[in-house]
Amino acid sequence: MNYATRAPKINRPNTVAVGTIVWLGSEVMFFAGLFAIYFTLRSVAPELWEHNTALLNVPFALVNTTILVLSSVTCQFGVFAAERLQARSTGPKPSQWGMVEWFFLTYTLGAMFVAGQIWEYATLVSEGVTIASDAYGSAFYLTTGFHGLHVAGGLIAFLLVIGRAFAVKNFGHKEATSAIVVSYYWHFVDVVWIGLFLVIYFLQ
Amino acid sequence: MRSNTVILWVLAVFCLVVGAIYTVWNLIDPEYGRVEWAGTVTLTLTAVLAAFLAFYLELVQRKQGGTLPEDSLTADIDDGDPEIGHFSPWSWWPLMLGGSAAVVFLGLAGNFWLSIIGVVFLVVSVVGWTYEYYRGNFGR
Image: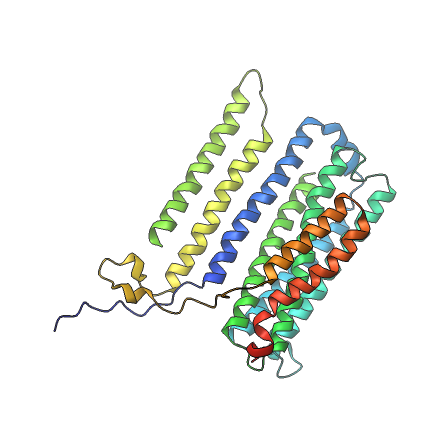
């Protein structure tokens, strides 16, 4: 009898995770377009930037950024719980929390970020910076607005993943995978915001 | 997969180099003489796109603990036939999701009240699609 040697046992790449990363690659290019708009307008109309960036509330934006970065941390703890296949908490201590508790906390932090941004928009609009006021307004609201829409989409995704944890009797690898890919998305959106914050508020 | 990673790293370096050349060329051009931001940003972030995918695939490769059958010259066809994941044989939900998104955007372009109706359908389709294999016969 002559058999070929069997291929070694391997962990095949998770198609959902790899697919999500490839899609996030396309999201990089979406935001590349927005950054290109921002930098191009800034280079052709520096006087608008000088006038409008003075109205930005940088300390407030810094606090808001910190909230979003912290939400990425809590999201990752939720992923660790999902990887242990632990959906719910076994006790009140954070070390005993399951994915659901961590993701609810992440949701709260993310919602605080969005609420903070709405407050910031309202303040800026009352000071005369609107999407139609000038090129600065358009660039500012397009970049931060599309990012805000992504955050809002992520919040909905968190709710759907939490719902899946409640829908099954046994939290398994399929549920853990959806938690992990939502965390990929959330970290990506977080990193994009750090880029936007550095460009809009720090670099101005 | 190994070759995918290598190709993506090559692409990342290529885009980075081209981005640098593009930026410098614009700067030294006597008729332009400044950074052309659209091209610089896009080329640099294309490099980021390729590096991002290469980095992730490298992590996956390291974690899989061996060569995939499709990368191995001595593998048999059935070695590459494991359970890859769950794939829906058919579903109406994507169609409904696309239709509701179309209604939402039609509302944005025309009359806003149409969007409100569209959002209701959108919510139903998203929830329906996400939980399609979590209810009824598939509840577990």
